[in-house]
Amino acid sequence: MSSFVYTGLPTRVVFGDATLPRVREEAERLGISRALVLTTPAQRAQGEEVAALLADRAAGVFSGAAMHTPVEVTLAALEVARGLSADGVVAIGGGSTIGLGKAIAARTGAPQIAIPTTYAGSEMTPILGETEAGQKTTRRSLEVLPETVIYDVALTLSLPPALSGTSGINAIAHAVEATYAADANPIITLLAEQGIAALARALPAIVAAPDDRRARQGALYGAWLCGACLGAVGMALHHKLCHVLGGAFGLPHAELHTAILPHAVAYNAPAAPEAMVRIARALGVSGAGDAADGLYDLAGAVGARRALRDLGMPVDGLDRAAELAVQSVYPNPRPIERAAIRALLARAFDGERPAQP
Ligand code: NAD
Image (tube, rainbow, N blue to C red):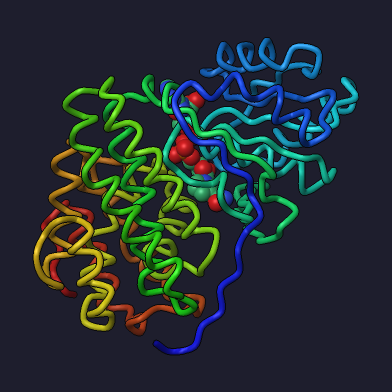
């Protein structure tokens, strides 16, 4: 085994079914006496439920969380927090809502409880992405890492099957890239394999029967492990492409990850053979060459749209996307070559089976 560095992240995790009522004792543990509960407009009722459970430790509900953490939403939430003398935040929702909690913590140092209801994994990372005037910036700091995460399987039962499938593959993408990260380490690689395996087993079962609690439990557990991978090691080509395409063309986050992942893996396969064996094994397919195909087939099995054209990508955007993807230098197992990236994007645009570009 070669030498490596591993840094453990200090999040307390409460995992299970019907764990939500523990939110009050977790707030008390963190010394939060007036929590601002955060949600999207669609999840307002869930926010009210959390406020009721917090009882005397709730200050109010802010239900304006939005995709990509716009700074103007954060400023509005901060004003509400100040008006209510809030001393902590409880974010219940997907990556958008958890992102708002992190943005508030970054500006105030407020302690956070994150209660994820999708599989995106933001709750386990010290990463905050924000948008201002159409520009997305990302920072990494322990200040934004939630102190406590409550995973409640019951909350994921309402996640629509289609979103469950793509959100779960978004999580798998974190673990896939962790297996070939420049700063990969054996601990995170263990989590990555387990996370991929748990989600790959659970997602098709959830799409077939969305209220299958056993499958929901497996998926949420897998999402936790995959989120931990994202928080611990650096990501590569796949995340770069999704960042570029999401930012430039406003494509939907989880579906975009699902469409790109098989192609990014096919691109990197020749430069990361050991990682490919691990990914294939976790997916339950056979050899190294099967990792990309296995991911493409998993996306098909959950009924996801696999063509960027169907997600709203304009055909005349392919050249620009390839240009943006090669502009900055970042670690990736295989060197980034413009012509090959352009070919990768063309296949993803048409939703074709992945091939090594
Ligand atoms: P999201 O948070 O935008 O949620 C999508 C929609 O689904 C919202 O309307 C939400 O209210 C609804 N929803 C969520 N859970 C539900 C449930 N259980 N039942 C019914 N509806 C539900 O989507 P997401 O994919 O979770 O997060 C995407 C965002 O998170 C992006 O902005 C992405 O950049 C960010 N993200 C950040 C990190 C990080 O580490 N910083 C990691 C992953 C994702």
